[in-house]
Amino acid sequence: PRDSCIGLSGVVFGMMGFNARLDPTRQYSLAYFPSFKFQAGHALPVVLLITLLGIIARNQSGVAHAAHLGGLLFGLLYYEAFRIGWT
Image (cartoon, rainbow, N blue to C red):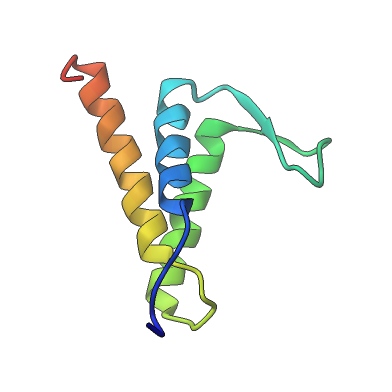
């Protein structure tokens, strides 16, 4: 199929959302720029904004922005369930 999507990026975004809520002060760095460090809590709104802009722009880049958003929202909701003891 022409519009199929293969990958686990939604899962990665879900884990990123969960971990950013669990420990927002945790320091991360980029693989190719290890000296560039940022906190998980600061990266979360940036990633959310980029994903939303990707959905709104509807470009043909091949990036599954809706899957990323779905994974991110699932991770955030799962954290809330974890926090109140549903898991």
